[in-house]
Image (cartoon, rainbow, N blue to C red; front, side):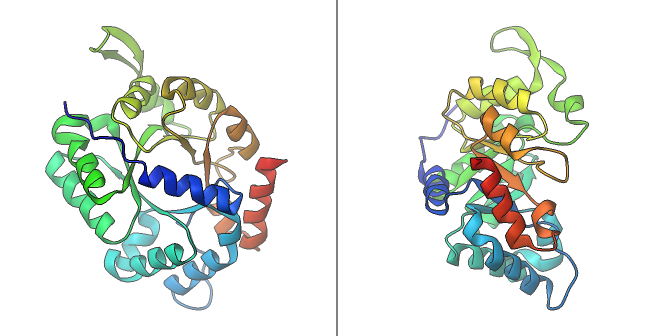
Length: 258
């Protein structure tokens, strides 16, 4: 198994952005409220209001599907970049290698700095092509390790046999070990499970930063997740659907530090 060499560009981009903004909040620009102007215009307006208080942006299919990848979505990606914000595509890549390569190439060509992928499909003819494309294009790959929703335990918490050490262990522990072994640029661990953040952080040995979604709308707490070891906190509806997205973003940023 050939693992890519260390590529620090995306990790460094995130670190520098967080330091410059004084924030570790990643805005999930997924659900945008109805209002005046086009969907693109409303998305850009939220970016312009919140960018002083966030360090990156994450997009999901909520926005990409209605906008189109190389049309409206790219306008939002370009706007985020103009504001000094890295952009992550939450596409949860989870297919065979050939398909995964095409998916990652398209998102990277559209300007995304990193993609989120599912380690369940494995390395050979699975995620290896994604890491190869990321290395070639100096982009990042973030792996799902434990999601934020209520049923996460059904998949990520199930006990599986790990042939590497002939032991039974929770699936999320295997995924965390893969994130470390594959030199991933990040690991997704739900903010709704601070105890999992602590446990997974010990496996990652400080070499793979933790990104935690699920703050606010799903019940996750920024302070608890940060104290448990999350480097970056992903927040969506609690900011985008707030009456004042700018103030909401500032409040979350301040809450982490206080």
